[in-house]
Length: 204
Image 1: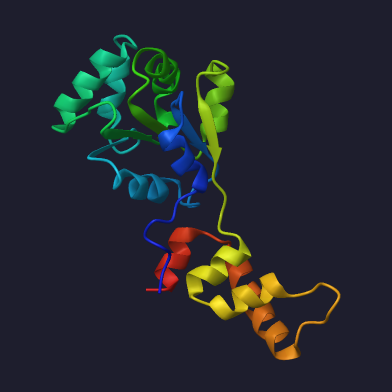
Image 2 (image 1 turned 90 degrees about the vertical axis):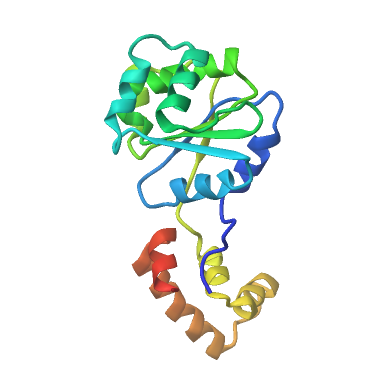
C-alpha cells in the first residue's frame, strides 16, 4: 500500500479543463509532491514534456533571445525530440526559479498560445517572483502542501480509522484503544512531516 498513483491536488484537475485557462505556477517548499503531482497529471496527456532548469541549465538559453511562445515551443521540441502540441501536450517547467525569463514568458503563453497546457513549479519561486514580478490576471497559482493527517491515514490504508474520525461526535469521548492507536500514528505523521516522497518510501 502506497500513495495513490493519481495523487495530485484536485485544483490541478480543475485547471486542465478550465476556460480560459492560464499557465499555472505551483508554489511551496521542496518535497511536498509538486513534481510527482505534475508527472501523474502528465499521464493524462498524449505527450508530456518536462524541462528541469537546474538539471539542464542549457535550456535557459532558449529564453534569452526573445519570449515568443511559438519560437520557444519549436526550439524546446527540437531539443527534447518530443512533440509539443496545444491541447495534447503538458509542458512542465520544473525549478523554474532558475530561469526568471521563463516565468515572464508565461504571460505570453497565455496571450498567444492559450490552448497549450503549461505548468511551472519551484521551491524558491517567491524570491524569484519578488524580483521580477508577475503580470496580474495572466497566471494562476496552486499552493501545494504536505499531506494532512487524514491523507496520511488514507495512504496507510487505514480506512476504518479514517471513517471513525469522520463519524465521531465531538461531544463523545473516543474509545481508548482507538485514541491510543491514533495518537501513535499522529506521532509518526509529525515525525515524517507529511512529505509524500518520504511516506511513499516508508510504505514500499
